[in-house]
Length: 283
View 1 (cartoon, helix red, strand yellow):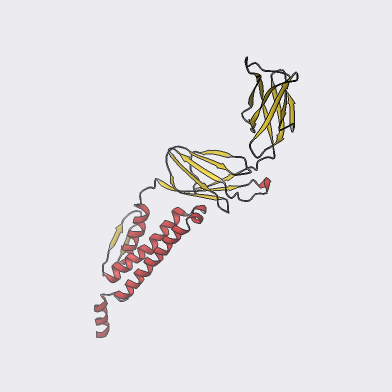
View 2: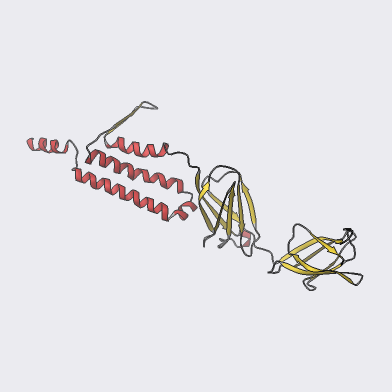
């Protein structure tokens, strides 16, 4: 009995020595640091899974245990937390320290004004599906503009995006695909936006009107030859024309216009379906 009383008096009622509690506290701190490194270096994958706001709170658990072990075991401090709503709760000793760190970190953290966003770009299922790597993704929100390229899995990650403010505008461009622009009024809950890029068609449709250079009146009967005869059309009574031709890599084609055997148009025009072209005929 005397031996037990002496041991109890030495440890002040604590089941472990101060050194053991210091080791436990250090272990909890190391776990918290490891989780922090995971959050930093695995940011892209965590953001892509929509877990960036959840991993942070996991850090609070080992930090709370570390604080409790150090305060209760090494410093021999105690604490009590009481509440009467909704039911009476009483926490004593190390539990009080752990609760204060975890609960305090969860509720007292100010609402973030900046955060993360992941944009995943894929091909439509009708076109075989799969990620689009190397696409340029631009995010505009008010004065803020961020640009990233998609990685091998078709994802672009933005780590410092304003969470509040004006509407969010996303623009995506990739070689061989039609450009995409979309507007979001609110961010998705998981902060992951999924977009589909349609492959660029091998052909394009050109439409427009031929006008007299001096009077700006529509000209009928003008024969237009695009890309050295790859597509030919004659303007109707309202001066309108329309041709379909292969999409050139340069983004423009030659067009020669003749009327009654007289060449009145010889130039380059951009390959675009919208808006319609307006061509001037005459010297």
